[in-house]
Amino acid sequence: MSNVNPLFSPLESMQLAWGLKLRDFRQWSSPRGQQSIRDWKTRQLEGSIIVAKSSMMDDTEAMLRAVQENNNARAIGDKTNSGTSVYLPVMITAISGIESPPDRDVVIDHPNWANVVISNDPLQRVVQMRTASSSYRCQIAFFSPDPHAASAIANQFVSFWKHEGKRGVDVHYDIGFAGVKVIKDKWNFRVVENTLYPDKIDVGMDNIYGASVDCIIVGVEPTVVGLGGLDDDITDTGEPDGSIPPKLPPVEGNRDPADQLNSFVIEADIIERSAKRHTRVAIDADTGVITESNIKDDAP
Image 1 (tube, rainbow, N blue to C red):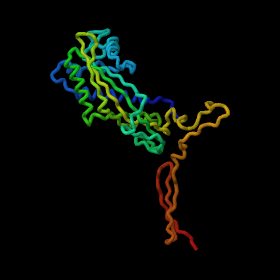
Image 2: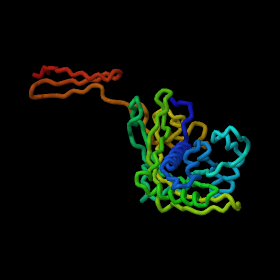
Image 3: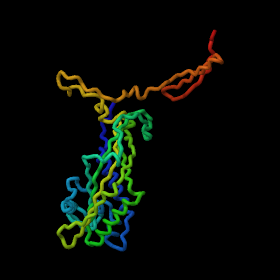
Image 4: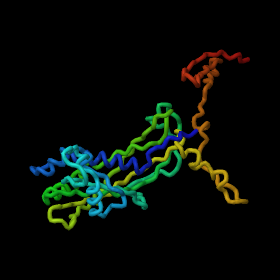
């Protein structure tokens, strides 16, 4: 039976992971003696890193206008001002999926169903999983009243991703339920180093300087069935009733039935013919208690 509560989509999961990585970069970066970067690092997060719509990617002027339309004073905790304004420096980011998957020599996925047990599932159910390779394009734009600050952040951002310990992005996917608890599974994406593209931004204003950096993040995304997800009943289970064209046979699914996946032997005999006896091993399906009984055979 499927749980009707919504799970985060793969894109939403990646957005959360990317946002956490930008927070890591903010704490990792150095002001290098520049007061504007120090202000950016110590300001409230809501007014320091702002998420833009995917449609604004490559349109940095639209990103800046979107910030101007918000009450940024409230975002940074400034109670002396209100209304629309821009508090610089500010980092704006956008992320979007890429339709073409990464090359197989970069990421290898597994499109066939595999029977697995998810470590985070408290019920330890046998379920089925497959994976698909995925790519995301991520962009940051940093605006500052100081041209040196914009350049410094762009250079440090590129350096951050060259750090072997920082290149990985842990993405926690929602894959199902244990009761009402959401089960998450962690997968690691990586920034493709040769896709880091820093560039200067010209917004047409003498007192605002900007720099942007693009990068591509690649990895695999899991599809798990058997944990009560909303789409479990129509994922590779054959064509749904009512959706088949008239007079055509249905296309069959390839998944294993849930009762077959979670079936197991509850009783087995170990026969010792020379001793004319056997040992019966049994497990209680409800409690998991295992018992052994020695039985003497009445052989002629």
